[in-house]
Image 1 (tube, protein in one colour):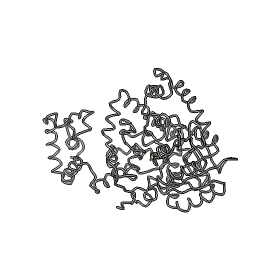
Image 2 (image 1 turned 30 degrees about the vertical axis):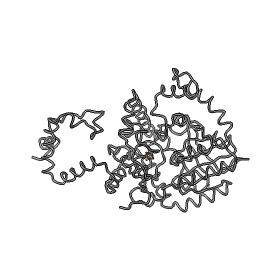
Image 3 (image 1 turned 180 degrees about the horizontal axis):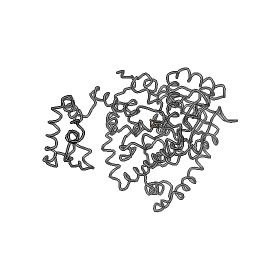
Image 4 (image 1 turned 45 degrees about the vertical axis):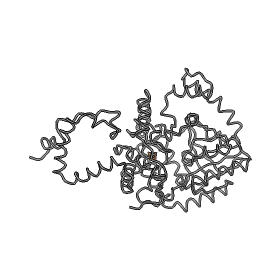
Length: 468
Ligand code: SF4
């Protein structure tokens, strides 16, 4: 197994169980989050039922992405050349530091002190906002959910709906503190209007607007941004300077390939046929200036990994999060990372293995994520492989490593397994409670173990299915 250079060991590990416990302890949050996120999943199911060739589209999307990624150097050069021909200024960034420094340099050279930006997971990944704020630039998120998260000093908890983990009453409280609204009024229209009043003057005075990109088209040198609020458009249209951060994996070869991905993106994300705004940018607007920053930040290392390169096909639709039972019940902030849910579990360890070593175990491995992924990423296989990497690097938690090692000795021997099964049954019935529910068993803090079934599966199989 090739272990790519992307594996870094630098930070203290996040503890998803402790973070999940914090979320679960908040009244009504877990149940509301589960309901809202699951609704997006069922909306997605209904939307794709109306597209008879959905499975063919998935296959095509997967093939286009794989083809692009295996010819990425050519497509990047083609994109750069065509973008320059349109009058776009193209920059390259090896990592987050180079990306942030490039943005700062462009803003400084234009004397910009105030920036509005639409949602970009890449800019989150690079830690761009704190970097710019430290250097005296005022940054305002223009997406409503992102702005709520910014005012809360929290990262997004979902890649499509960043504040989905909050109740309306949480937002009312937050706005009362920051915008002076009535903290007892949680009417969404009232709150949205208050945000509009607060945000508009910031939009009008901003010296630059930043966006990400959903797709960058090599054949044209243009790129596409999809939003439901039109906020990327205002950022790109009002200030004279537009900067777009684009991960190098966002390339697709031809404009006609957009027809495949645009049909899948919003249906997979929210169950709607298309995003409200699908904006195409081809060079700077008249009198304006457009900069594109093509960012690597470990993507090339991932591309060189046999086991993990398929994760680069991701179009950030969030469908895998909406279907994941662990994500729905623990909330996105429990991952302690830029990317949460199943896609986070396979992306974050590649950014920092030491810090995110626990995330591959924050999954039931049920495989539902792989089933819904519109670009057919083998997410659950990759989660399993990340577990293997964590174990091989000696980074597994001691209690887990001991348990796994014991299982490894028992499972290859059917007789031993059978004896252990019977012993466990009787042990569970007689073990004192404090030995089962203690600090070594964090999952036991919030749930009771079900009583053992009167019959094991083996006993049932022998009685009902075994050929006589
Ligand atoms: S991994 Fe697949 S399902 Fe998950 S966000 Fe990416 S494209 Fe969507």
